[in-house]
Length: 491
Ligand code: 5AD
Ligand code: SF4
Image 1 (tube, helix red, strand yellow):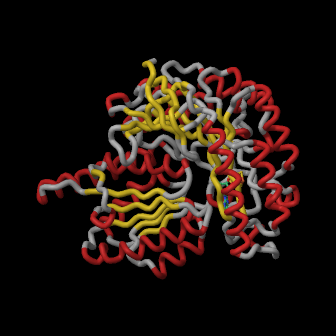
Image 2 (tube, rainbow, N blue to C red):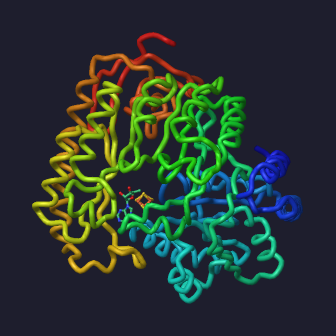
């Protein structure tokens, strides 16, 4: 979507929807700033015989990755081109995450390195944005210890980046612009998609669940759903551009539609997206087990394009830990839910998020987690060590677990998981799957990497002209996190 389309989009959005508060004038103003910076960059290119460059580092989840595509889209409209080495780029953006401490530490570490580049090239612009910036303590630290940062903005005002950059270029003064409110939906800015054939579509923003360990509800704000017709419009436009696989994104897609004033649920939305011509696969994440409805299970079962894979984070297997996490389900209820899903959709792959080291979690508690792993048979899992986040209820719980116990428990969880994942992959050897060729394999340009409907990663021999197509691939070998196969016959 280019900037003109974006303006048109927002104009229509504004007519249609109360929740969009970003005015047409405001967006035209931003467009004007883009034009001005573009002019600067064109003059620079004439004088220096090179284009100005940008580098964006993205931390955290798919939401951030999607926001970075928008930032890249805006920068490209300004005339910047990509640069692999951030130390040499003219504009460096860190789109940050604060879900775990190590992601934050990495940002601080990288900023330290960038200081030298900024000293050598004072024209370089260092921009920080994303979830980490929604915390006052972070802003204080950056302004005190990392004075070479030029611009800081947060998760609610990404669309304002052109104005902030222009103002900084003109004044040379550092800018911090963080909004604490979360009423607006600033969506569909000009965006550059990393992949031609697959794309993410935000269906909602924010989270109202307040799991006791999680900072997301504080930095991403309250749940806000996009109107179904806007989502469909975007999906249709992506399909028109050649996109075949859509990933619908939200922190908790199951509560899609609440407070929207439309008679809509996530299940209904899936059915509507399933009708979009050109789209061949639909994925979504993330579902919360507490409110996964039967209606949704039936929709996954009945929609031919919806992949037979569900990502359903369970976090921990012990009921007392789950209660203290404020997850609002028990181990039994989770297992029951998996049973129900599998009964309706035999063969569906289930993946999950698991957290180890939540306050109060000892040996007995971790055994419950391992029990769930064994009973469910996850095809894959994201495993996290609990990270204490200031401002969350869990951060002040007394029984924080010692590091060596956490590490031991974490290793046991990984061991149980890896054994099961490998077993599940082994069962695929010798079978033929329809694989969507998504990218050239990293490290071996003669191979492509793709995914089956049930989210299994498959490497198979192929060339880049085959990307974006489906192939019947027979799995010949497997490791824990991927499989290898060969094409048996083209679709
Ligand atoms: N520490 C560790 N992991 C966390 N997650 C969320 N908050 C924390 C935290 N404080 C994990 C959860 C969630 C995933 C997106 O990130 O497992 O499902
Ligand atoms: Fe965080 Fe829980 Fe919301 Fe997920 S559902 S974003 S873990 S508060």
